Amino acid sequence: MRPTPRLRQALFDSALCLGVAVSGCVAGVEYQPAGWAPFDARAYLLTCLVALPLAVRRALPLTSLVGCCLAYSLFLAVGYQPSVNWWAVVISLVGVAARRSPRVAAAGAGLAAAVVLQSGFAGHLRLPLTIGQALLVPSVCLLFGRGQRELALRNRELKRLTEALAHEQREQARRAVIHDRLRIARELHDVVTHHMSVISVQAGLAEYVFASDPLTARSALSTIAGASREALNDLRRLLTVLRVDSEAHDDSAAPLGPLPELSRVGELAQRIEAVGVAVEIQTTGVVRRLDPGLEVCAYRVIQEALTNVVKHAESARVEVHIAYEVDQLSILVRDDGGVGKPAIASRGSGHGLIGMRERVRICGGRLSTGPLSEGGFEVRLFLPTSSAPLEDT
Image 1 (cartoon, helix red, strand yellow):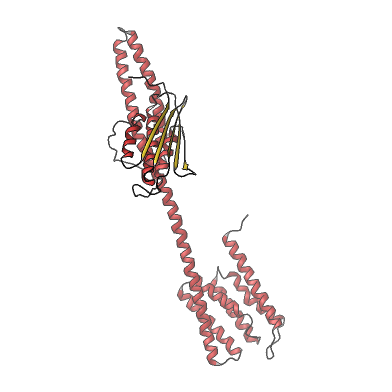
Image 2 (image 1 turned 90 degrees about the vertical axis):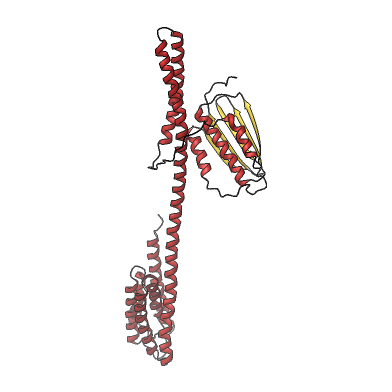
């Protein structure tokens, strides 16, 4: 298991405490100028006491500073050389300035200045040097600690903004999915209404001629059965669309025109060509009458793919391949990338691809999108079908 940040900080402070204590003991043993008390067992103990509060310099910074100052003051009062152990006071003061308010840090700086002043007097320094040292050392510590405090505040604010941005992006994606699902639901509503109207009329006809014209009644019942099956499929898709974890409402629904279908892709291509994008449409296989929901899905995917070409590839050439296979409809929209800059200046939000994937997922199909190695972009769509060939009229 990886240690938590708090545990890592505690381990670092413990190691720092041990390092300061060891370095102080080594310095006291190796450097013993004349005129100072020898570095004996009591000096070892006091050195460890000076360094020990550093272990809690994050959790209790002011307590750590007070402990270091008191232990160092006692170390000086006994008569040991003042050049040993004073780094613990400096480290503690920096911690106070980094984690406490300026008022508390100023009070801690006053305590540290008093100890540094005592160190200067104990070292028999001249008065100007002693006072300058007592003023300079705490000031530098406050400056470094203040910088650490501001850096920590900026990092926390950056983390908060990053989390807020990620949350907002997730919300935008969720709203885009809900918006597109509601739009699909309105389109499927027209399909279901059509089926129910057919069923109602045919049921009335069957009831009217049930006794006088059995063949007509049987034909009406057969039509009702077919329309019912199609209506149940559309209702199943509609319930899938409406199964969203949201309380979002949209009261701006406007009456919809005729449902788009693949036979109108030529009109769409003409509108796209008007802005400078060449569109070539190829249809293979036997053209069939598809379920209206699948027609809408296929048309919208082609529409979104061509719209993205207009936005992101000026003067591009686009190939649209529509293949009616035995049990599926496959569509390929591929462009050559054009000259590489938008024909209409815009910045995409990525919601178009989200909407396409939602449509295809609801209809039980597969969608793949991505750039081509030679340049351009490709959209592939596969939709399962169970339709009869379209009869010429």
